[in-house]
Image 1 (cartoon, one colour):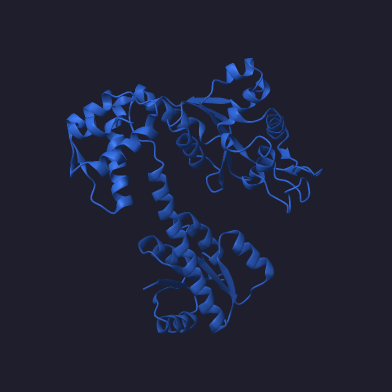
Image 2 (cartoon, rainbow, N blue to C red; image 1 turned 90 degrees about the vertical axis):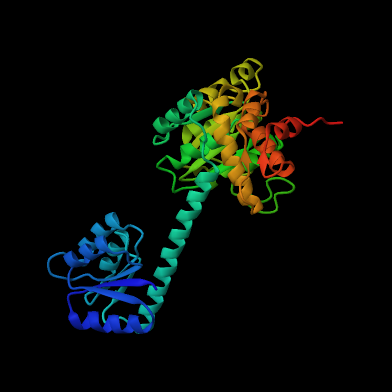
Length: 388
């Protein structure tokens, strides 16, 4: 049952609102002033607060400000007999969900309460989903090599510095990018990923910067590019070493001037984007071969983070296997399988050219092909199957 707090210095108003809301099936508490309301917010969890603005002592606006620090996700519906547009705007700026005038219209009040409850429910669901996603993309392991990466992320994430992430395929470069975004002041904004290796060179500029209708044969409508989509957030350029030289020149301009131009357009568009890039190539060698711009390399690589291959952090394999066993069990709707110490030791001795991605595939294969417990014999039989 949703729980509502009414904060109002007029007993008649509190009694009337309580009677109406209880009739609708809500649990209702009362507070006769702002100080008592703040005290109750600290003791109980409320789904919605109905709060008068004009009260002696701590008024509704002051209570709202303090409540946004104490319970920031609790929707406040402000009520006032002396309401003006300026008052409503001020309340909204300080975090109020809605503003009603006294005496409130019954239907308007109940609709506002229902909408506020829906919003609170969505906020809760979003937080749960974000926690699930964070667990899915968490960096598992405590080896010295991985610990250095995590320490670098902790230092760099809160800044707006551009980061160039290097490492072999399958080592987890995208996890580093996601951790940098989630630890930044832009975490509330979008994280837009672009795999530069998966997009044909003739389309990469349209993908990054967008295009205007009619700018080329298949441009039947305007397209918003990834830079614009990432405005206020983070743009992750994966496999940036595979980007064409012409696209590199435009990315360099975007980094220098914080503006882009759509393909076929002549209007400059301001963009506020933090750019993270990743590559499995040695960009210094690519610069020597004249396939990558040196000036772009220095723009992207304000901070360099190298993700080590799995062969350099074998002590993380048991933790990774445990995570994969649990993840796979959830995907299949089964109980997680166990694995023997001998099987883990065998996996730790293998050469992991495909890194963490290969290990995950091997664990899934072992789950499918083995019994309730994965043994060393299972690992020897299925970890490196003979093809042909």
